[in-house]
Length: 111
Length: 415
Image 1 (tube, rainbow over the protein chains, first blue to last red):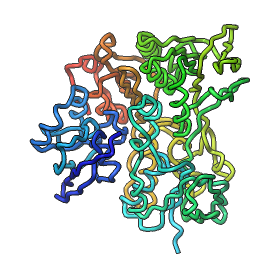
Image 2: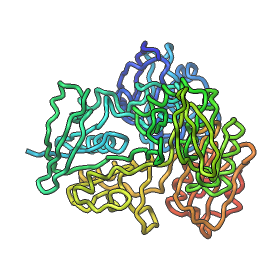
Image 3: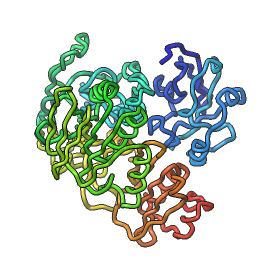
Image 4: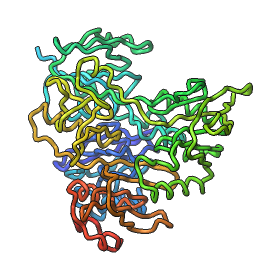
């Protein structure tokens, strides 16, 4: 597994941003859990089974992260917080170099 | 000075108790005792992504190593509790070889409240040769590491038990190109958990992936052959050979400490709906705890992450005087081959099953009814049904059967 990292941020509903070092190749969810980002529960551990690692992506992050697959889209139908066009499950997004300096938005609830 | 909460066991339940206590503002000392090394980790991926080499140990941590220090949670890794003295509310500890010397772990520890999250251990194959090297179990990281190494060198596997662990290992091993035979005492897979319609579906998918099954068969003996392979004698006289034997025949609850401390136990440590044991200073959560499921009068254990996490949150809420979360229907999942299986509800007592979706295309849910009430839902590659099903099953909601059979109608409409 690659040891190189990028800086990504997580913005809480109150506006506060937590910046972390995210290992390239890991999922955004794993990086968030490893760095104790509040508001990402990931109860199923990243199996796309629980919809509790929901996040919102900015336009540029959406372009980098690509599209959700069918299964993820189905889970997104069931998120606790409002589903928006920018909604994704962070367990299904891989950290890549282009994410350096970008910020993900954490929803106000996960379950 | 307050002695705070001491938590024995740092898997999903134990770590969640500590984390939830902190989240709820608990400001007394918290000590988390982890009988392994180094950092508490997630178990579900051990039989899946970890075994398949898709993630390493770093990818399995429950919280970063710095979390515990940052949150002022004292994590004692490589430390085992040898006895509880409930009268003076103390524990006796021993430090395992290899634990960090700098830790200076104490040999006794006092508590105001104790949480037992001691889990369960994989059952050993109870036959001659069941303890040979090359006969392996899978429950913790050490066992998963040993199995992963052995699997790399093996061409063939015999798996004792067609439960979740056995089938998940079979799926992973087939992906790695190994020859796999699953030996099951019952006449079908997952017989304790599913009706035949689901067992047959799962069996077919595994057979299509190349796994062979021997049903109605048990292992009488395992003998080591000269080449290091194993000769496995089956009930009925057949013999098969394999490089490796994997044992997935269930778990033995780890309630020794609780029993010795005089706690009421059955199959596990008995707890009430707030996860309190028969001692008012001791709670229990996770695989080691037995409580009454919704609508049931029997004590039972649920071995799942969801159960561990939910029970942990209940304990933390009680200890901080916060509103206690309501019990929900148990749910869990398994990942095998191209099957993502999600289950909610425990009742195998049902009057009727409605099939929603297509079993041929491996995209369906089974809805179990008692009368008009939905009491359980098993979903295969139908994640969209699962989360709505959790609420419907928890509330035993009445849902018209013809509506649930129509995949054009969303289950969440009935929540």
